[in-house]
Length: 493
Image (cartoon, rainbow, N blue to C red):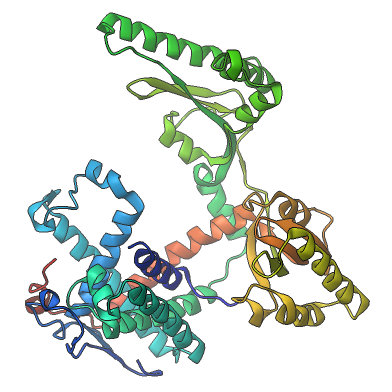
């Protein structure tokens, strides 16, 4: 499967999702802007010169417009992710950031520091890429072109220019040229990061040692979570309100004092059933479905501590907490399995997707899928012949160049039950194929391999993360990184 690191993918996703809501080869890459934005409207003309060099390293430089881009990238991502909750964090998005305190500084200082920190890590790994002869490929540049063309299409739909749309989200000194350069350094940095990560290897003993030292992170349990509401009338006295709350808490405690998991489920079911009377009465299957919907699998012990369990709790089957979750309810959390590392599997597969966009009905798509599957089985089965059929028939385009390969699928992480049941069948061997239905259409699947257990991958991420921090500090000690304060101090938001 084509690999582009999460850093670059996240950048593209954030940028494109925002808009939808409304270099050279190797060697040095000069990331400066000529300041000639002739398309922005009069009120967007900057009062500062965005083309002034703000940060330099041994072989790279970025100007103030790049600082603006990453400032707003981080700010926009926070607003997009947290929305109205930003006010709970003390930020009013309608007011100037410099007028709002954040700790001992302001929200402007927070986002500027965050942008400078992000730029530093990006440029340091650009230097790493340069040192190791890593360059942007034609495919990388084509992907950037595609992303920018999508933004241009969005601008056209909004009857504006690409520069104006970009400036709207990233500040008046950011235009398409700056946008492209930010994508380029991010992509190059990502390739450097990926190269470094791929040099790291760990032994089985190192995996086990790290797991043993951090069991609270990696050990998981399955839990039921449910909130018992307390309907307090507006005219209730304080004593009456306290009595209603006490009754809700007592009900939660009663459910959790069950003698077994099955008894707990029965008690929870009876409570849920009591909420629906008369014509709203639930069937037994509906009650069971609601009980099952309260189950959350794979909750780490550290998450349970965050939910309210004591750090030294037993975390055994039947352990629970009942806590006030807001002014009028109590939440129960009930453990149903013993703590254990996540032994679920990770798998790779190939596929041919037939969608409703191409076929008028599901039956028609399935009939065609069976025909293609028969053609595959009648030939010389294998990756080569399956990949050829992917190129000929699949409605999925992004991974055709790798024969429809998709890697790193987590057991329990697929929403399509039929596909998940087939893919993670323990008897599965390389080369197995089938036709399955999914929400997006009909899929012909080819089993590639089981690549390990999820706990191993989780430990790997932590090990790589710690080594990345070490490498970043090493680069800070070997690369001359300079922030030009006189220029940066001109930035306004």
